[in-house]
Each structure stands twice: as structure tokens, then as C-alpha cells.
Image (tube, rainbow, N blue to C red; front, side, top):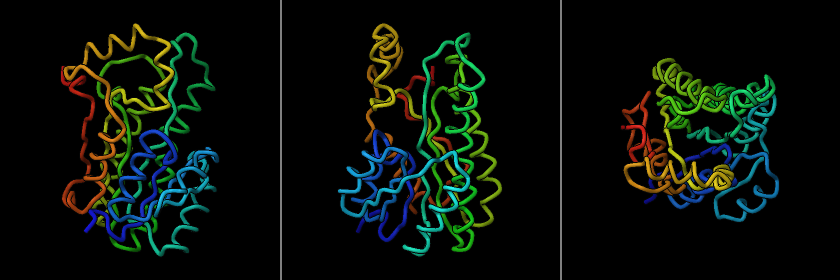
Length: 244
């Protein structure tokens, strides 16, 4: 028996990086996975996996969220799991950031998950249960980088705690993970800053970067019924970096 047998799961940013690892793992564990992403090429590739359907989604669009969640429920009958994983990053220095940079970062990393919770929880309430897991960042827990990314991920942390408190009475659990630097396409740009990358690795107690599968495994637990009494939880996956 799979740990997610007969579950219907939405994974945003599900067509690449950590999201793709989650999609494959969830499908292997018995779920029907909707990999929601903006990249059509990646969606076509992820849809080749058994029990994974790619759907185009702009997470910052209220209208698009309404359309996608309605289509999923019409096709599959319900939404059991939502993984708010889609996100963007920036390596700009504070003095380089514009108001447009700030707005875009928060639109994807904070407002997007808000919309996901808003629309998915509507159907979860009708079913009387659900599990939502948000991907924040270790930068939301420490003073690392005076930038829009850290602020957006801190906003997501607060949103998740508020949602957990509000939705618990509906048997909807809301938890958050805080990955460190994980080797994904989004962090690949850091390789051009080799000195900074070397410093990050050296400062991490476990002495290496994380792998997408390691994050996927943790999210699988929180999404599953094994975590049935965990809500408002925060799980750090950063090799010990933020423990210092």
C-alpha cells in the first residue's frame, strides 16, 4: 500500500526541481498528482510520468487558480493535498532592487500560496479534510540577506501559521518546510558565485547542499495521514545551517 493511496494532490512548481521530485514520489506512493506549473515544456515532460497530469497555472492569478481547482474537482472529485512549492529567487543586492522586483517576488512567493490556500481550502472544507504544505526557506528563520526573497518567504511563514489556526476546525492541516540551499534549477545560478557557494557549504554543519529528494521525503510525511495531528508545524531541512 502506498502512503498516499487514492489521494488527489496539487503540486505548484511541480514540473521541475523540487516540485518534480515531489510529483514522482507522490505518484509512486499512490497519489494522482496535478503538477501545476507555468513552463509548458516542463509540463509536457512531467506529464509522461504515470499518474501525473501537468496543468498550466500562473500561481499569482486569482482567476487561474479558480479555473484550475474547479477543473480538478470536476475531473477527480476532490482535492486532498496542496503543496505550495512554486517560487522565484533573486540575487540582486538591496540597492539594486526596484519596487517592481519587490512586488514580483511577493506576488509569486507569498500571494501565490495565499491564493492556493484560498481556492483549495474551499473544496477541502466541503470534504471535511485536507493537507496543505508550503515551501518557505531557511532565510525566513535567520538574518540572511537583506532582500525581497527573505521577506517573501517570511511572509509565507506567517500566512501558513494563520491558515493553520483558521482551518484546523475544518480538519485541514497547514504545515511549512524550510529548505536550505537545494541543488535545483532555481539555485543553479548561484554557481556563478562560486566563492559564496563554497562559503555556504562550509558554514553548513553537514558540509553539503541538499538534494530535492530530501525535501520531497519530508513533504510526503507532512502531506500524508501519518501527520494527522500536525498542523502549524515547521520543519527545517537545511543541514543544520539555521541551528547555529
